[in-house]
Image 1 (cartoon, rainbow, N blue to C red):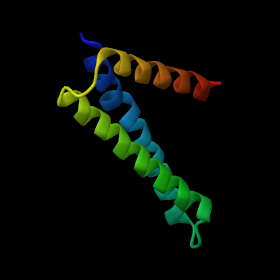
Image 2: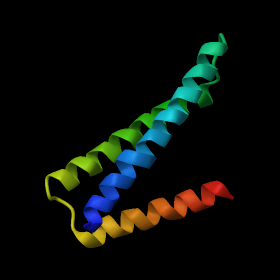
Image 3: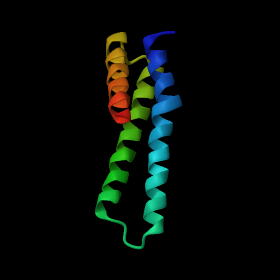
Length: 87
C-alpha cells in the first residue's frame, strides 16, 4: 500500500470520523443549553474548517497531487497528535 493510500485510509477511517464525533458531542452540548458559550461555537467552526481541510487532503490524494514525502509528514503529524491526545 502506498504512503498516500495509508494516509487516505487513516483520514477516512479514523481522523474524519473522530472529528465528526467531536462535532456531534459539541452539537449535543449546544442543544442542551439555551445560551451556548461562544467558545463552543468557535470550536465548532474550527472543527468544521479542520474537517474541510482533511477532505481536501483526501481529494489531493485522489487527484495524485501529493507525493510520498508530504503524505508521510502528514501521517507523522497525525500520529504525534493522536499520541499527545491520549496522554
